[in-house]
Amino acid sequence: MTRAIPVLIIFNLMAVIAAMMWGDQSIAWSDLANAVIGKASPELQMIVIEFRLSRAILALLAGAGLAVAGTISQTVMRNPLAEPGVLGINAGAALVASVVIIAFSGVSPAVLPWAGFAGAVAMAAAVYALSWKRGTSSIRIILVGIGLSAFAGAGTSFLTAFGNVVDVQRAMIWLSGSVYGADWSKVHGLLIWLAAPLALSWFCSRQLDLIRFGDDVAAGLGQNVNMMRAFLILLCTLISGATVATVGLVGFVGLIAPHIASRIAGPSHRALIPVAGLTGSLLLLIADIVGRTVIAPAQLPAGIVTALLGAPFFAYLLKGRRHV
Image (cartoon, rainbow, N blue to C red; front, top):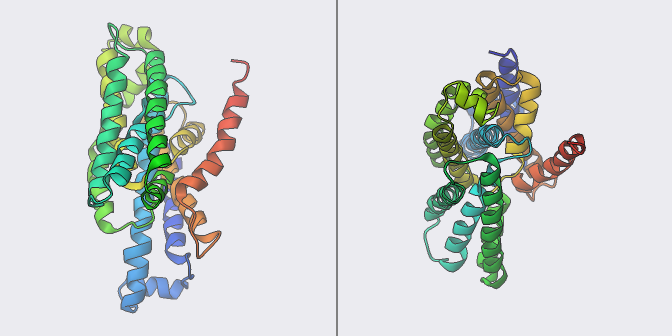
């Protein structure tokens, strides 16, 4: 296991401490320590533990999930520019969530995460089914995913164009991606959803290493390529769908983190997956800290900050491959 993992864990812990200290009002070291050990006032403990710490942990979980899902996507598609959005997961979640928010505005907010998750799973299933032709291939999945994502995006745009202004504003806030409004129930829910798929992703490290070399090589080494690709896509859908359903559409973490992790840990997924998860958690938490401090007391959604970081990174990747 790479020695970078302890270093990344330390960086993540430092970011959590910074997230608890910085906000609309900064909190001193001594007050933070008293709040953590339960010797501060009830108001300060609520701010530190209930609001800021839960928000930081939710950002860590969501960032790790998006990064691992991005790692799986790039390996299965054998495309360094891939992320979970290629499978239509984000577009499906956005469409169904927009329908719930705009067309059924009276529905309880508790329904929204389930609706987003259902949309993500349904879209991923449709992409896989339509790309099946005596088996699957990476290029067919990518092309079908792009087409269905465009279709779902058109549906979302139609709803936002003709919906009630207040409901459309709520939908746009969700679509921008944010850990605002985090609480411990969301943390527990996301942890339960992610625990098994993340563990299974790591246990599938050898299979990911094989499929990275291409279908023919993987099949020659004994892998059932179609079955394994379907299983890996299922894992990616479960991870990304649960994350998107909880924090909305946070872009580019699933693109950036795997590339940084591969520079640190190398190509072996046994080390790459945990390093990518820790890198993604750190990226999203830093993005959230920047978003809620740079123009305080107003807040930028974390998804906007990651987009500002991710757009030039995407251009850098394209530039490096312009002759390929």
